[in-house]
Image (cartoon, rainbow, N blue to C red):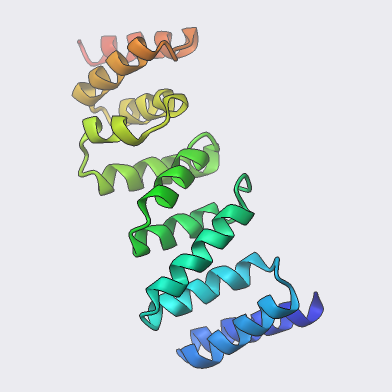
Length: 178
């Protein structure tokens, strides 16, 4: 463990010194010493992207994603890598996974909103049903009434609404004079 962490730290230093060859070497040594050193795997994928080895970076991302399937800690890094690599399945599944976690929800919804050009119809196609209420709450926060109405219809059809959200939505509509 200590050896892997030391190699990882050397890799980080080399990375910040713009020495991608040395960084790659140290990250490889770190994962060789500890195959479960997720941070080293993720940095290795970044190095491979920087070196235009997208195929290798994609394999690493797939490996890490499977290994950390239900672990929040590394999901944001995986989301960013998946976005860079155009791996939409990993990108969307991890975003849907982190949305229920309050500390990442706003950033996750903002990223989706940006990726889909503020088109709530497109987001409705990629969001899990369990995340629709969070999306509605986020839209209310940004006073996007038209989008709120669209999402409300979807929530109503799928019957994923609770009394508190229903009350909040009615209060929102009253404040918006709708």
